[in-house]
Image 1 (cartoon, rainbow, N blue to C red):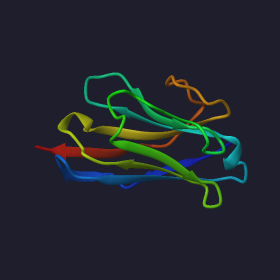
Image 2: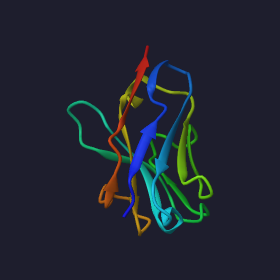
Image 3: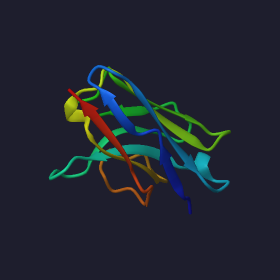
Length: 121
């Protein structure tokens, strides 16, 4: 089992950058694939980016390709989401999630509590 805590959200102007962090508890973090998902008001939760347990494979939603970068540091039990060139439509609650499989759906086993990202025009 793994527990996840996100940080780094906040308010930023359009075109700006934020880096989200997700700290995981437990000694088995490196066994898990990780994902960042987001949910905007009135919309379904969507997968933004995913990374496999070694960091050798990544996935990005088309809407964030070229702007967001997912990475992980297994020594620190942490996964990151670097978000550049932020747009108003990136405004959402961002969730970190873990699963033993690298999946490109929202069907993750473990979830953090979420962190709010607001992009102002």
